[in-house]
Image (cartoon, rainbow, N blue to C red; front, side, top):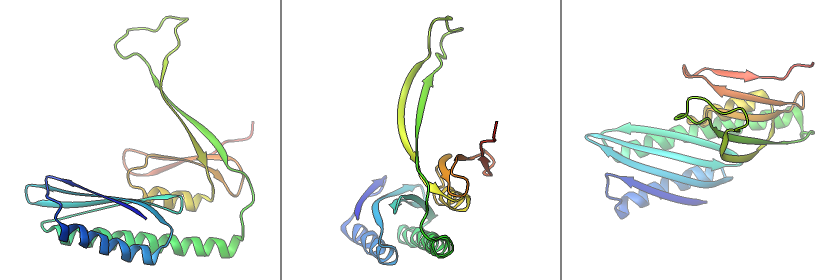
Length: 189
């Protein structure tokens, strides 16, 4: 497990780092597939906040907690992460016992960010918009319940592309501004 700790407006003392490491080791014992953990400790006036982003077994888990004591904030976020991991493990166990091994394929999806030329009034007919960023992602095979769970675990994720295990088609979940989730499913032509 690779751990990085960042302090914003707070001095990272050795006892504070040790406390965070000990708490993370408890999480690692309860869920052994944790790969990467990034902890951000920040202080704003009297609010002391701890945020944790964790990659575990192909999922991203995010948690944050804010109190007037940094150690209490660390305890609070670790409790939240522990509950999320327990819920994930229970769903995983339930799914594997009822479905066995999955069959199907994962689909590679291309994601492009296009610059529409905000400063220009109108694009010429022959001018194509410029691609600012290009990324390829794997649309992993999962059920809709698993996709919803991943969106709940990663509070900062807005879109999730996945291959539906039931229909073997590319589906998408996205988070609306009001916090609700929308599920996009292709229809037969």
